[in-house]
Length: 280
Image 1 (tube, rainbow, N blue to C red):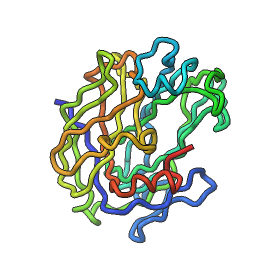
Image 2 (cartoon, rainbow, N blue to C red; image 1 turned 90 degrees about the vertical axis):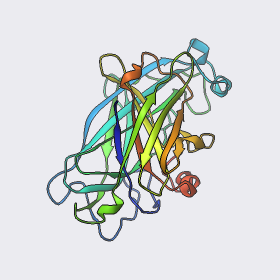
Image 3 (cartoon, helix red, strand yellow; image 1 turned 45 degrees about the vertical axis):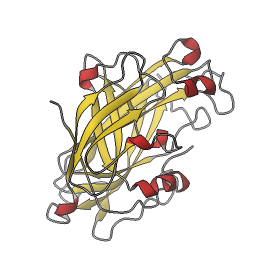
């Protein structure tokens, strides 16, 4: 049985800036804020990938609300995997992802409805965290306008607040996801079982891989911050959770789907959009 590991940090959701030049999240006073940890370790991108497939008007499997949103456009799904190489825990890390075309030129915010950077609450020493996004490729206000085709990802990992192994150890608890079931037969739902000793609820994100193990998509925090998927917030203890997606990503190998859990208090979900973590 495959088990994915995440972690819990007992902190409130703090202010997050959307761009590098804006003020980032306030850091816990006990943490060391830097790109690298004091022991020289850091967060590094270990894998990434994406796939582009037709939208509802071109034959993709979809939910009714996706059909109502538009017809003549493509859909992109991407995913990234980040590893903590330090013996320190990385907290409140801002991660920003841009789509780039075959020439390496980034698609700008004026090209498509791009969410702002997301924050990963905590990545324990030596562990990995995966997340992504599945969205339509349509120019804001012009849903029928075709865009340049994304070919790769440009990933920016911001500073983290680092905590040594011997500090706050009882708050960096392991959370596992098992019994993962992946979308198939037209359904766009990933289901899983979470086991957590934390008293906090958790966000669930997923990475999708094909039969060869290549990342071809994923889900994240931001795509459902606009409201209709409270089931993605999983209750503490042992509980069953689900991730609903607008589209079924083609060629997903069910046995290779990975689920990651990140604790964010449910009362702060609405504030995520207001404070700039999610949105456009």
